Image 1 (tube, rainbow, N blue to C red):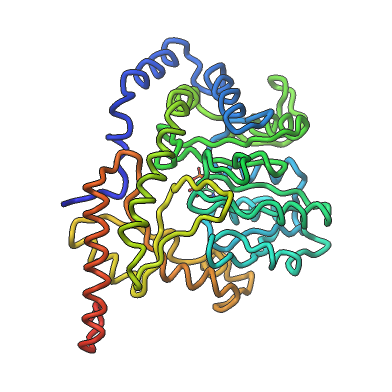
Image 2: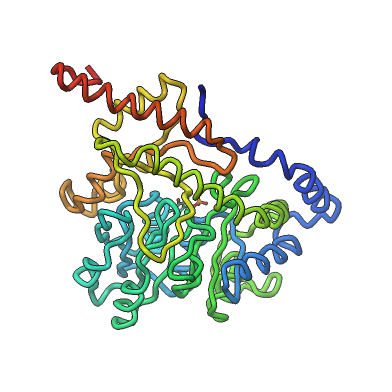
Length: 381
Ligand SMILES: Cc1ncc(COP(=O)(O)O)c(C=O)c1O
C-alpha cells in the first residue's frame, strides 16, 4: 500500500464548498491585502488561543522576527533558543542583528531543557524562545520562572503547535508573545504563506501591527521603519474556515498517534514519542527514533511509505551558523536526535489501514536491518 506523508487534497475535500465560498467573498470584496477577512480571523484565532490579541502576518518567520523587533531586540543582544528546530527560529534572531544562543533539548520531549537554561543566560540575553517541537509545548512553567527571575521576555515558537495544551493552557499566550506559522502543511494551514503573533500585551500588539505595515499606524505617516509583513485577505478567509476544523483534526491526529504507539511501542529498535504529563500533544509531526535512520527512510520509500526528517542537521551545525563556533558535540541530545528522527505519515485523514501498513513496513525495515547486522552487512551496503 502507498501512504503519502501528507494528503492536503483529502483534508480540503470535505470543506471544499466553504473554502470556495470564502475565497469568492474575498474576490468580490477586493480586500486582498490585510482588511476585514484578516481582522475577522485575528479575532477568531485570539479567542481560540485564549489570548487578547492576534496579529496576522506574512508567515511564521515574520511572526518571530517582528515579535523580537517589537521587544527591542537589536545588534549585540543574545536570544536563547533550541538547536532542534527549523532554521527560521534562529534566522529571526539573526535578522534583528542578535546572536542565537542554544540550549540543548530534553531527551524525552525534544523541547528546550529548562535545567540547562540558567547557564546560557548572560547580561546580553534579551529574549528566550522555547520551540514547541512537533506539536508538544516546552515545559513552560520552569522556563517562565527562570525568565521572570532574570527579567527576560519569553516568546513561544508555536509554529508547530496550533491548539496544543500545557497544563490546560493553549500554546501561544503563555509568554509575552506566541508565534504561529500557517504554512499549508501545518495543523492549521493556509493556501499559501501566512502567520500570526498572539499576545495579551496591548502595547506589543500595537507595535507589531505598525511594524507589519511599513511602520505606519496611519496611511503614509511612518513612525517606524517597518516592513511589508501583512497577511493576505484570502489567507484570512481560508484560515477562518479551517480554524473550525482544527480541534477535530488534532483529535484525529492524537488517535492516530495512539494507534502508532500501540503498534510500534513494543519494538526495541523503535522509540515512540513521549508526551509529558499534563500536556496535550497535537502531533504536527509523529517522529520515532531509529538507528540507521537514512537506510530505514530509503527502505520505507521502497515499500511506498513516504517518511520525512525533521530535521537532519541541528541549527548550530548548519553551515550558515559556522561563525557561532558551536562544533559537533556542543548539544549532544539535539545532535543524536537529528541522526535518529524519522517522521511517519501523519494527517487527520489517515486511515487505520494506512497506519497498520506504515507500522508493518517500519517493523520489517528495522527487522531487516537487525538481520543484516547479524549477517555482518549494513542495510546501506
Ligand atoms: C518551529 C518553526 N518555527 C518557525 C517556522 C517558520 O514558519 P514559516 O515557514 O511560516 O515562515 C516554522 C515553519 O516550518 C517552524 O516549524
